[in-house]
Image 1 (cartoon, rainbow, N blue to C red):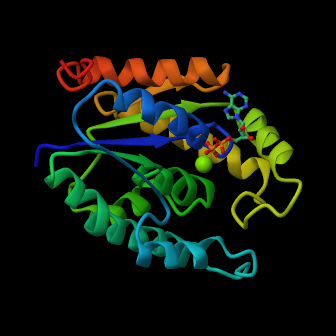
Image 2 (tube, rainbow, N blue to C red):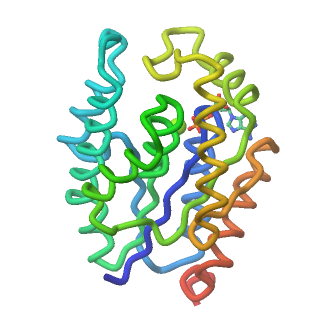
Length: 216
Ligand SMILES: Nc1ncnc2c1ncn2[C@@H]1O[C@H](COP(=O)(O)OP(=O)(O)O)[C@@H](O)[C@H]1O
Ligand SMILES: [Mg+2]
């Protein structure tokens, strides 16, 4: 496999999706390799169906472990349908969230246990970790205030959870960053959008200088 797999992680409101939108064309200008952007939960037809169940505001009675298993199931399908074929075709895959989200949200946030959630995800991803993960660091307070400003309309089931939940998610992310220094690079997401994008692009260029070299 010769493609490159990069995931983007961080709490809700950290600015991952915003940054990916403007970062992708910048990266495309720097490489001849094709870039594919995807997201979780979802990213392929079956995985998107599972996403709808997970995020449905009406599923308030969903058991925490059921939720964790659904995320892992959606991830497995996304991996098989999109990620692995993309990497096998020597392309670059950018994923808005991947396995660290489950460890932080279900393991830490829902308090199932990060080890337990990592184990079911090991089964799902079968060793296919990202080559690089960019972690968008933001305090839970700032992240949540951005989301609230965003949708005065309905928040999805997970975003409705308490500030304490989001603090546990944040703590779990920080532990993941600490425990995976070779894979995860943290950037300060509490900066102007252009600066966040510039920092993320620089991390990627530094990690893969032979790939993002202006197409030379
Ligand atoms: N660097 C930034 N500074 C201020 N607001 C931002 C920044 N990046 C994104 N936002 C805003 O914050 C909200 C959440 O951004 P989004 O990209 O959806 O976050 P995420 O995908 O990480 O949940 C959006 O309203 C977006 O416009
Ligand atoms: Mg997003």
